[in-house]
Amino acid sequence: SSWVAEKLLPSILEGNPGPAFTLNLAHKDACLVNELNQSFKTSLEFSERLCEVLQQACTTYGGDKSFTQMMDL
Image 1 (cartoon, one colour):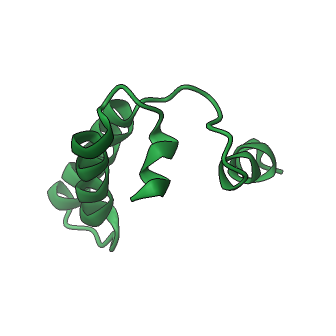
Image 2: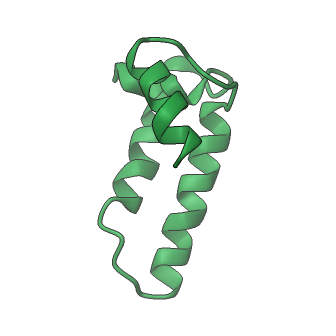
C-alpha cells in the first residue's frame, strides 16, 4: 500500500496541490537522479526528460510553486 498512490496522486489529479514541495526541489532531485544515471551508465529512459520538464515548469511558473504545477504544462 502506497500513500502516494492512494492519497497524493488522486488529490493531484483532482486539482488539489497536495503537500508543498517546490518545483525547485523537484528539479534538483530529478537532475540528481539524472546525474547518477549518467555516472553509472544505467538506462532510466525518462530521467533526462523529467529534468527538462521540471526546468521548463520552474521557468514558466516560478521555482517556488508546488511541483504539481508541472501538470499544467
